[in-house]
Every structure is written in structure tokens, then in C-alpha cells.
Length: 545
Image (cartoon, rainbow, N blue to C red; front, side):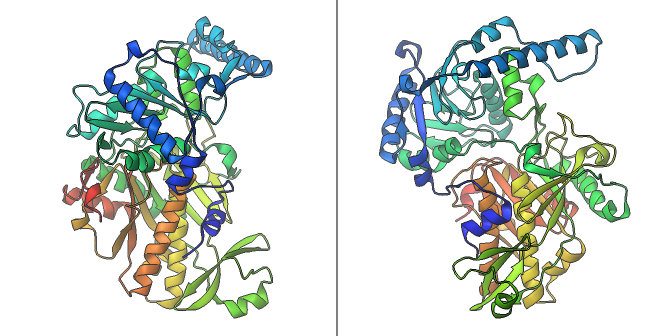
């Protein structure tokens, strides 16, 4: 329905964003961390050789390790040094007064480690084979803690295989990430390999069958577009706080609280992981882990959000719009006028112009208990208005290191604005549409968990999309673009085929499901009353054709 350029304008994504794995591969630079063949298994060696060959075939730039190194400016080393000194000082003060705090003591071995002047250049991903010693991990040689992706290839544990439960994979992956200081783990055996990243998924692939295709569709996107949590600097933070007890929010807050409790019985929201509980080797590595998470205290998986009632926008025939808005370009399907963003769409062969609706969503903060919501401390208000993200705090709360927006914020907002656009179109062509009425009067519940709907149980009028997309990580620009593009395309198909449309189910391969529903509570009851509808893990993913 809309071009990628228009979608990026709507979502406020300014950087060039590649959606094709083949294009991603040509942009990718990797290097293999030095290793001793005597210290790795034959399975790891064989896999690494096959992976290297495949990278070359895909056009990936495989850089010799010696060519990745650059001399780091002294000022950057000094900055890190003083950050650690400040961290240790605050750690000592809080410990002295026996107060709870987010700091970890970083020993002098870490300080010596920081004095290394030669480090891996930004933008080069590093692949480590087998286990490496403390202070000899790739993270100890990177130039940037956030811009050098690290992939570690390990032997597959004997107690892990394709039949292992989701929780077993989840716990294993999180322990390996923290112990090896890596964003991606590949477990290999003689016949298969398992891919772990922070999506909390565990695809299992054959080493002998379709190896190149799986590397291209599953591994390459995760390396090129790694998980990066949203920071406060990406938002317009509103000075005025909102009151969760105000009449305007009562029904929305109630839906989140009641729906979340009902979701607890589904088992779709596993307990999160705290940085303090993860097996980092020392305080320095734990400190780096917090930097990767933008100083979050941990991670929780999935989200529950409530879209506020939407502002329906009018569709204006293009002939009339061109007289009103001289900024309209014949070659683009979007334009700006008076600081407002407009899109141009085509329905039944006729073109219309509409202003992109502003949207607001109540969302759980990152790291909160997803099924036990305390509105005064766990909810924040997110907005997307003319390509800018807004953030508003509940009354009495302040921005702290423990108060962060969801990793999936851009995806949440993408779904919300897509709902508003679809509702505006339906209001124009089918004024009696129940979907448009739902959008205007009550808004929608938006949920995400790390599992999939059994397609046999999809509710009537809910259409799915995304099952053929590459396996991108959450928080990436790609995930948000796929969410909005897929939603609008499936809506357009439903409109063209005169199909009933009540919402969409967005499949994120080897990540999970996003669904827009009448309310969080309604969705929770649907899932709770029939446990076969969805479970954690990949059980139902391959049923989508």
C-alpha cells in the first residue's frame, strides 16, 4: 500500500534500512577472532570452515583479524577509566550506607584491560570459536561496546536438542550470552546447529541441508541489525505527567491490569532475567552487559500495550488535495505540509490524500512483570506524531535508570499507527465498520509473546502476515517496517477481496507473534480458555504457508 520511504517517514526512521538479506550480506563485515585449533572441537572447526565459505559466496566481507585493529584515542580510554572510577566510588558509597543500588565493583584487572590501545574497529562483527579465557574475550578488544556484534560458536550441550522445552533453551541461551559476553550463540554438533540471540528463539538447522539459505535468512539479518534498546534521546519527553487514575485512562488502565492477570494463566510470559542473577564472570563484564541494555537492570520478554482511541482522519480525493497542498509530488506517496505528514493511497483505482493520524499507547515499562501490573510504576505513555516518538511518565514518576521503554517500542507504535490508518480508510468507505468503531471508541489491545498462534484457531476476520520475512531482531528498524508494511498490505488485500477485517496477526519468524485485538482482556480469555491456541516456542510457526 505504501512505499518503504513513506513507511520510514511515518515511523521516523531516518537511516538507510535494508530489508533484503542479500543486500544485508553485501554490507556485512566479519572477522574470526584468533584461536588455537587444539582448543576447539572438530565440529566447531568444520562448521567455521563451512560458514566462512558460505560468507564468501554471499558477498560478505571476511576481514583478516590483523586488519580489523585500530589505535584508540587516549581520550576515549581516559573516559572509560574515569567512568569506572566513578562507578566504584558510587558502589562504595551505597554499600557503606547499605542502600540498594545498580552498581557493581570493577576490579583493577579491568582497568588494565582498558589500557589496551589496539582494538577492533567499529562496524566489524567478530566470530569467536569455542571457549575463551577471562580478559581474552572478543569484548575485551572491541572499540565499541555497542557497535561490534559478537558471535560465539560452541559445542552443543548434550542436554539440548530440538525437542528441548522453551524454558530450557531460554535459560541456556541467557547463561551463555552473559558468560561468553556475546550477542549471538551458535551451538553445533555433527548434524545440526542451533541459533540463539536475544529474540529468545531457538531455530534448529541441519548442517547438511539448505545451509546457505539458513545462514542468509536467519544469521545474516541478526548480525547486520542487532538488538539495540531505545534510549530516552530518541523521544520527545513531555514535561507534563499523566494521571493513571484520571477518567480518560480508567478503562484503558483497567484493561491492562485485568488482562495482564488473566494472561498469567496462559504461561506465555516467562519470568524475566535480572542482570544481577546472570553468570557474568566478573563485575566488569556485568557493567558492559548493563551498557548493552542501556543501563537496564534486566530483561523481560513480550509486551502488553493498550492503544488509546484513535483520531480518524479524512480521506481527500487527490484532485482536491493538490489544490490545497502544493507540496504533493507526483512521484511520491507522502509529503509534508505545515509540519504535518500526509500519505497518498489508492483505493479502487482512485487516489486519496490523508494526514497520518497521531497515536498514543499505554505500554508496560521494560523489565516489568508483564502479568502483574502496578499502574503507578509500571505504565508509560508512548506517542507517534508526525514521525516523532513521544514519551510521557505517570504522575509521581521520574526518569531513572530502571524506567525504560520496551525494546519493542517501534513495533508497538508501528502497529498502532497502522491500526489508525486502516480505521480511517474503513470509516471513509464502510462507515458501519465495526473495526473503525472499535478504533474510535475503545482503541485496541496489542500483545506480543514468544510463540505463535495455531493457525487453525485464528479468530474470524484476523489475517496473518510476516511468516516469510527474514528473521530480524526486536528493536530493529526492520522489525518496525515489517510490522507496518505487512499490516497495511494484508488490510489492502482484505479490502480488495471484500474480506472481513477485524485485525491482524503479525508473525515474526523465530521471534514471536504480535496481535491487535479488541482488548487485552478479551485476548487473554481467548487464549486461557483453549491452551492449544498458542504455546511458547516454535511449535506452530511452520504451519503457516
